[in-house]
Image (tube, rainbow, N blue to C red; front, side, top):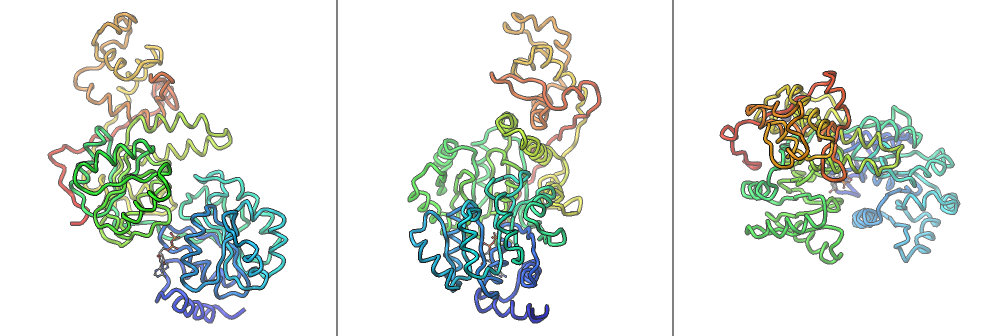
Length: 518
Ligand code: ADP
Ligand code: ZN
């Protein structure tokens, strides 16, 4: 084994010769140096930080083949194309490849630097058998969070990798992921048998992205306003295909080029829309989260969410598609109580052993959404960093919001939900609380309840934001028929053991116009 300085000099040489880059970026050098020294590593690097290079470079330098485990065939083929374009000898071994025999021959003849496989193949006995036929330089495990039930994308097949890795115990392992909170990271290390000192985490801050998170009142109007004030290419994420189609059509009528993207479109249409987006300077793509992976467009100026993302990890990843060129960019989320209601309802369908992790993920997202604190600070803390308390480039830093203690009002609201039988929507409960007796209120005898009319005109405007906050944190949950019921920590709130605070937005006239590209 050559010494450290020699190895690094050789790595820089290869970096230039094979990839045409003049220097390593961020933690790339640390990761490559560890791998070249034969030590197993978990590299946590945000999207766009250049993870592929950290295994491709050693693959070129080390004798033998680097086996790359990757979860998506489409992703593998992208990687293959890019690697081959750099003159790297690479192949994929998937059910979609007609040239499998030829690939196996090349592998056995020692003619491959990189061999990409899916986890389900990697865990088969005859694949292990194949690997004994030629020297292996490195195991790269891409999207390594898939091995963890704490991760947002657990794949049981990843669990089957460990025996393979262990049967080639002398071969170093390099696990890679863009999205892992502390919990998931520890789990990846344990599951893949990587020592704790092998963890290398890149900085997650994206200082040029300005974060803003707002309640959704009229999505169409809010998105139109965003398009009006925000030039440059942008992505709007919507939760369903139908919503994508609807938004794309309505927003497209405004004059700007707007195209849809979701898995229900034909592959040709998707490819065409994606190509148009990549080439454009002001197009807007309305898309499901199917869009974005592997797209190299550095000048995306804004990413908007028309509903909540799946988790903080997903939010970070999706907003991270903005501003890769380092220029000022904007990430805006429009959220509604119903987003959280639906997400909490879906928790019921999650396998039981994963439910707690999913609930924790949703709670973390609710905290980010409901906070009066710096959004960036919350994001970065989530990823295990120790950021400054304020960033100066998020909505809460630019226009500090007030915080109101509304515990008393929350108790009134929760009592009214309870006393009306936990089956009515907010509209009815609000009537009861504010003492408006319509037919239904009288018919049900709700005008005789002790909670009838206990909320005065000053408090009434706070009921809606309060209900939203309570739904986000799960203290109010939806019933099957669209009513509200008590959930989460509602009993603690009623007993005065938990507090409720809501943020009160800055006055509209104080809101300065802010432009991402100013
Ligand atoms: P990730 O997988 O982490 O999202 P990629 O491996 O796709 O990131 O790399 C993102 C982009 O950065 C690619 O276009 C890649 O060519 C480029 N890149 C990677 N490393 C360097 C470097 N050291 N110098 C310049 N560009 C780099
Ligand atoms: Zn901030």
